Length: 209
Ligand code: HEC
Image (tube, rainbow, N blue to C red; front, top):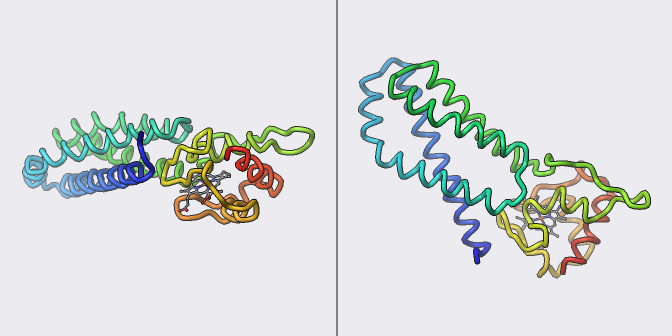
């Protein structure tokens, strides 16, 4: 069983390894583009082992986040493709001091970081078509499209430190207020979902308890 706390620690470890990885590549890029090829070679040599550890951590914790997420979103596919294209380009580009390849690799890495941020802020980009039943939005459909990515299809998953909705003791109004305004790692849905959709999903999550 993975607990909410270990998930949050792993997410933090993932973020730290991504930042360190990007930092290493930013330094390499600066050295390469300022024509400090000998400094680049000695920096690459010195950082070799830490870089291997950091990139392994970054890939493993990243794969684990995917596993937790369950539903794969379009942005995450872009992110994966960009990362897996960037890695061989980076290895060759920096080794051969080829600015075009290294620049492209750096661009792909930064782009995948951007996609990750976008996916985090807008998980509803998966699909935002709500199923309508008798002219009213279907709460389960709103939930699956917007909430399951973090809370899991049954409300218990706990991605990104999400609360277990099965154990939630909040009143309907309190839930609506969190859905509208967000809380910590949960983004606000005001402006993204209609009032009717928010009402429908608030009623639906009570049925998960
Ligand atoms: C990006 C991930 C994410 C998404 C998407 C998300 N949530 Fe959350 N949600 C969280 C997190 C994290 C918390 C815990 C916030 C805190 O207390 O720090 C939370 C807390 C809640 C709570 C409070 C539960 C309690 O008892 O404290 C409710 C209710 C809730 N979410 C409903 C929803 C609904 C409904 C949706 C979809 C419209 C949704 N969430 C989408 C991450 C998310």
